[in-house]
Image (cartoon, rainbow, N blue to C red; front, side, top):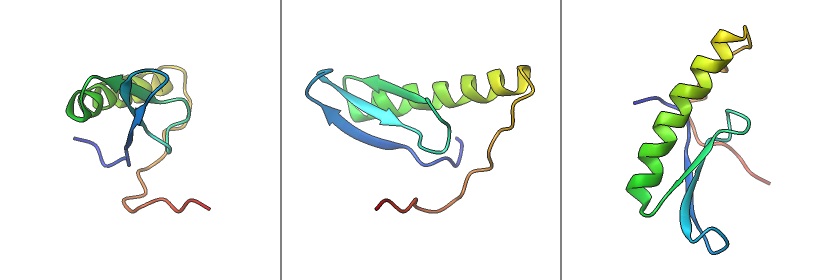
Length: 70
């Protein structure tokens, strides 16, 4: 398991739980349950990192603490 923060919430529009990874731009997934959304997010994180490395893009280090939202 990675150490990136994953934010999970219910989306009425999508009728699913959405899991967003704020530290990795555009990295998100969804699922019928919170657990399924988290599992999908873990896969998405792996793919995001793999793709970034393939294209020589930087991969941010996990902050390891809660992000601060204003």
